[in-house]
Image 1 (tube, rainbow, N blue to C red):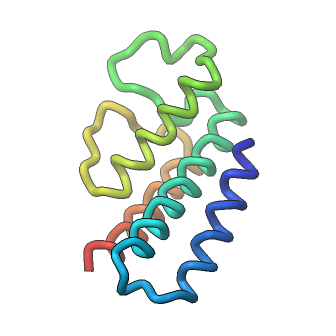
Image 2 (image 1 turned 60 degrees about the horizontal axis):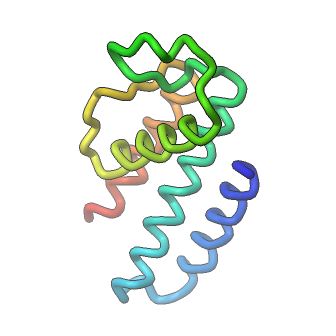
Length: 113
C-alpha cells in the first residue's frame, strides 16, 4: 500500500508539473501529492525499523505500533516537516528518515517562494 501511495503521488506530481501551476487548485494537488509521497516513504522506512520516527517522551514507542497508527504518525511527521512547523513531538530517529526529512524541508521551501 505504501509503495503504491509513493508511486501514485510521484506520478501525480510529474503530471501536474507539466500542467499550469499558476492555478491554485493545481498547486494544491501538487503540494498534497508531494506530502503524500514523503509520508509513504517514511512509512516504508518505518516498516524496516519501527523506531525510525518516534514520539518524544512517550514510552509506547518501544511497543509494536499498529499499522494505522504508524501511517498517521508518518503523515503527521510529513505535514509538520513540509509546512515548516516542526512541533518536535515526533522526531526522525533513523539515518534514512533524517536524510529524507532534510530533503523534504528543501522541497517545502519551493512552495514558500
